[in-house]
Amino acid sequence: MKVSILAAVILALSAFTEALPKPKKVWPGWKGIKYFFVFGDSYTTTGFNVNLAQPNPSNPLGNPDFLGFTSSNGPNWVDFLTLTYNCSYIQTYNLAFGGATVDSALVMPWKPTVLSLKQQVRDEYLLAYGSHPKGVPWASSDSLFSIFIGINDIGNSYSAKNASLYPIIFKEYEGLIKQLYNTGARNFLFLTVPPVHRSPLTLATDSASQVLEKHAIADFNARIAHLASSLRSTHSDATVFVHDTYSLFNKVLDNPKSLPQTKGYKNTTAYCDEYANGTPEWDSFNATCGIPVDEYFWLNSLHPTYPMHNATAATIVKLIDPKPWWWGWVWGW
Image (cartoon, rainbow, N blue to C red):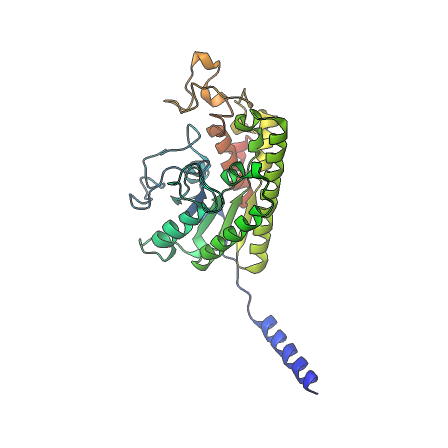
């Protein structure tokens, strides 16, 4: 008898739960995004400082003055999204920091002053924007949160072959996403780790190290995909995009002419020392290098030049908002 009563109660509760309205997604489309919060490492950073000038109509990127401090010898993918492929005015808060890992306590960055993803979220975003203390009127329905992380987690750890490390990293990563969600974040964009085992830095090592890093990247990217899937299933009101940066980079490295943004590349395996620390112009030419800097895929041993960032931004928009009004013009249709 007691079992029957309990079963009836459970069925009633289940029916009640099913009848409750489910949270609705608030993705407004790319044209509806007004606020862009960005986290990551050197592939993403522009040198933004939360305590200096904030994004505004004269500089949607806030500070420093465009184009800030990028690793691409020109605009990076965040710049292109904000200024080139935007469908409306977007204010971008780029909290990324060069050399960042998910958590410095788990994988040490190249120097202790580097702000990890954990610090970017907890010490910068939560304090400056999470509860709107700076008066930034962002809302769940008009904001996009993007994370591009993992290159340094892999690069600083893959040789140790620590099989237990990545689950710990992603437990922390998942917790940080939860903190963003709890502040109202509902629209997420994750970028997978590119094939940096094909960078000059790794190509200079032995073949065993290259294979080891390739496998580590595959492991990390599979965990990003799982994290995104888990976020979707746990929070039905979240819109989650995963940009396959890995495949995009491979496509261009194999055939630069496969995309209009990268068709000018002539060298995809090496870099020129004279260009490695940046040049006065985006297309500077030094005779000792043979070709202009923007015809090299790699600016230095690890970072691609700006055309690859241009392609990254263009394909991100294709992912999150297929065929906006300018798409045919961009791709020459």
